[in-house]
Length: 437
Ligand SMILES: Cc1cc2nc3c(=O)[nH]c(=O)nc-3n(C[C@H](O)[C@H](O)[C@H](O)COP(=O)(O)OP(=O)(O)OC[C@H]3O[C@@H](n4cnc5c(N)ncnc54)[C@H](O)[C@@H]3O)c2cc1C
Image 1 (tube, rainbow, N blue to C red):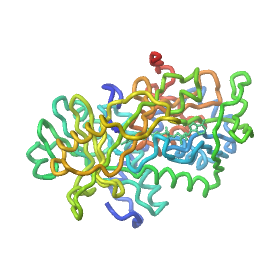
Image 2 (cartoon, protein in one colour):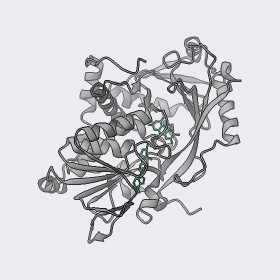
Image 3 (tube, rainbow, N blue to C red):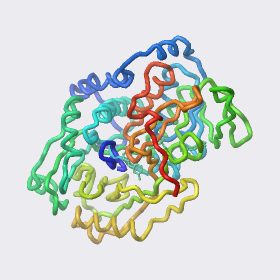
Image 4 (spheres, rainbow, N blue to C red):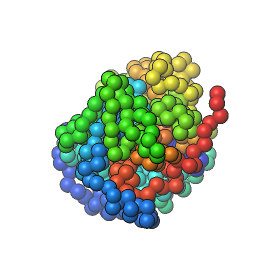
């Protein structure tokens, strides 16, 4: 929901700001033990190819990461910590207002339509987000829980129960009557089944990307603001990249994590395999002095009917966030007009009336127009360029990538360093270009 689930088979979606260091508790320890096997799972078979690359990987290889959004930022940090020399470059800066990682908040949840790999990745991401929070001494993950409301078919949630249990992430079914009693400020008309995901919640998006970038620089990474163009290829290798200041950078390997720009940066290899779609997000003001719509009193929430809508309370004092997860029209992320549409606002008001009757007349206090980087099947792309062996393509977050940042970065670093193999769910070869408009 954006994190929300959108394709049937593929996924698609408190405390004070400064926190005390957290002692590892049993739950977290267990989750980390269970989630840690993610990489071996992704890697499953250590092939001869992996072994030979491992043998040739030099820990001080220079790696250029293009894009400092949640995918590129965490990848750069993981590579740096794994001993590489890393240059991270972004055209406008980490989580800038055009980037898909911009804005204040994102849902984190492990309900994933029964797809175990995603629930495992979330379990691993939870561990890594918490570890980094301790280093930062700053809370960015608010585990206020997520309430899943289903009008009809609840299989997206129900199928996720077993994979979540397998990684020690709880999810409980409530009756609609129980849910009504627990959350009297919410509306449940038309809701047939309800589930509460206790470890879910929300992440601070823009802030955490900036913290990752700062940490990367503090730990010795090189960071630049520039537009990057892929350089010429020499055989099966990219020789270097060109920056908007006219300079060029050569490196051993390149990771392109360009979010919704992937299709523009690689017109042939990506093109319409990943498209940017317009997504609008609205924030409604809550009554002065009220606490019932605060994070904690109110969970993150998702309503699944013929479409998926969702919201997050609070949002760093920006009000109740409401969004429709349906993919919008295709856009150019550089030039799109980010003023909200009248139709989008009317739809958001309808959603608020249904789910929060007490906010029916709430004023719109802010809005954002962002974009998903929709892959052709809603799954991520984490694979080598089809013809350039030293180029990695990392994107296709498809409205549900943010939460995965640290786990995904860890996996990409392992791939680049020859410690993992590409998972078929994320393989380049399965992507299909959409028909031209
Ligand atoms: C409205 C909305 C709601 C969402 N909700 C959720 C949610 O609740 N939970 C969740 O998990 N996910 C959610 N997502 C999805 C998630 O935010 C994205 O999948 C994720 O942020 C994608 O990150 P990225 O790093 O791939 O892309 P980006 O954040 O877009 O980063 C790409 C970066 O590359 C840079 N760049 C591009 N081209 C170049 C170039 N040629 N040279 C230099 N730099 C370049 C850009 O400036 C940009 O900073 C949501 C997305 C949106 C839009």
